[in-house]
Image (cartoon, rainbow, N blue to C red; front, side, top):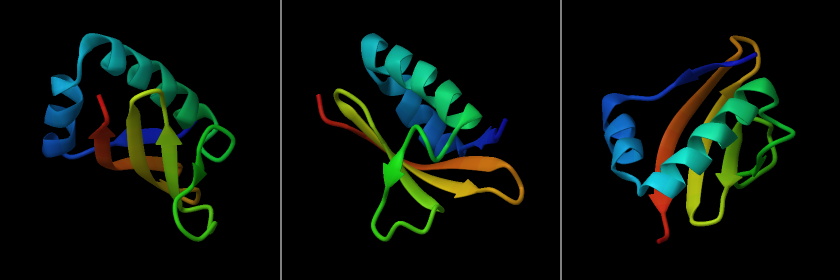
Length: 80
């Protein structure tokens, strides 16, 4: 299981999402922490480090560090 990290600004964005989008993101991030490569798509060049989580109306850019077992949210884009 990977540990989730995000800075306070990202947490504020997450908290400001509509309820349905926030709930969907919460469930999806739990899955990402269990299997970051299998539940995300490459972001740019497929280096296994920069990943994106694409949901119905939200796209999240992630930094995955396998050696430290970390998933860091870098950006949340809500399309709704």
